[in-house]
Image (cartoon, rainbow, N blue to C red; front, top):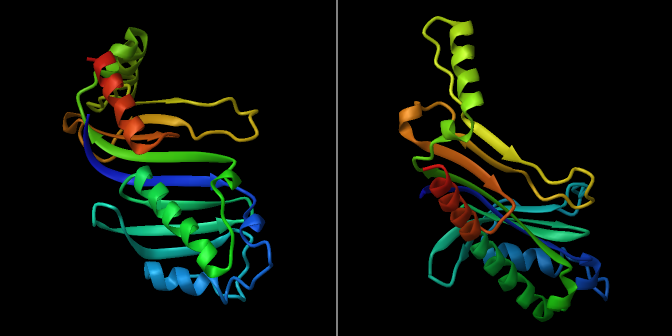
Length: 214
């Protein structure tokens, strides 16, 4: 598969965020101004905000180790922190490392052992030539029956599938989804995919999928 664009790369670090602030400092006097200054966030929380959905920082910039300026989003919850980019989950992790390593200098605290779990979400737009009709002759035949039933020169093809995690899990990973890009002809060979994986692992999996369906 050829990567066209990263629609979303998200890294979530689960932790008790209260452990980052053992002395109970006012975050609006220490952390928030530093984040705004260091990452140029144009949208950031105010003390009067309702933080039921987390403290959200958006439209910021982080320069990664390759010297590339990336647009970044950050949300701080009681049970973890979330970083979003349109680059890669590796860049998200690098961004979170940059933030957490600065915490001691702000009078806060951080130790890697505080992170209980890392969760990833990757949404990609790719170009490839998997033969989705090869998945099932029965589904292919059903598509032809559907086309005939609708009429008016309609043409339906099997175009999407998903794998779900067990829905009874307390911490459920996101669904794996693979589908044709909406709004384009079948001949464009463009697909949208989501996976609960780091960006590079997601691409590896899509290449295996294309080989399987070739």
